[in-house]
Image (cartoon, rainbow, N blue to C red):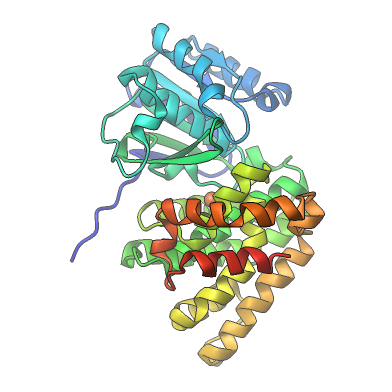
Length: 385
Ligand SMILES: [Fe+2]
């Protein structure tokens, strides 16, 4: 049996990788990029710097900076109009997961029309949109190397998963220097998202030898460095490891899948506007405890990779240590409970059956080593309280 692996054509990785953007554009034959980003990137001066670098190399770039966190059908529309009516031959997606996910949807809609709903899973989007050069500024989503985007339909609060080669950036510039000034909360939330990608790819039923090797490497990089990056944002070695770990975790899940944590996390995000990494973090210990009996060796490998167990530990001991570590990580990174986040208990409990249905419909729980039914998903949601 063989597995198809899909990756960007160019990855530029390491210190100041983002400064190679003129070379990367030139090697792709692109001359007229549209920068898609958000207001924070403008405020921090990243967009000015990028435009100056491009101008120095005779590239004229326009900017669409109105992308929003957790992008919606409405929030990307102005970007689609701009990309469709301009003479752009490429898109530079600069920012965290949300600008990159927005850019992926805009790139397809600008060239092929329709609504993003037309492109949602299970359709495989193999059309090519405007080529995307992704420049992530967080170490988390891995969107720079995945064939997925997620856009929320704000009329139904549905997080629509869209998948296919069409959403894979042609280039990814993976520059940890862009993460040095990230605040601790964002560092933690995005870092746990990356860790979740790696764990879920490794235990996924769609895992394969290629994704396994990327996933374990990602866990090894993230394990010792997430706390360091959270407490000491200026620690370059920690930031570099987190950035590479996040990208490898993205490669792993894009070529395997995510699983139950992500399946249950998206409805929490959609209904209660919890940042993606944070809702993953809330779920990760409980979902891991639920899933572990179905893949104990796999989770023992995760425990060894994250650095809390060694080869001498039995599978049982390694599993217990892994669960303890996930709890300890949430404590240290000050992950709130749903209640502490401000979610109203009664509304959460009322929505649980609906959220369970949405989780199952996303398909992600079906990739979990232990596949839950709706009642088991509701029981896990209830455990968060
Ligand atoms: Fe994620």
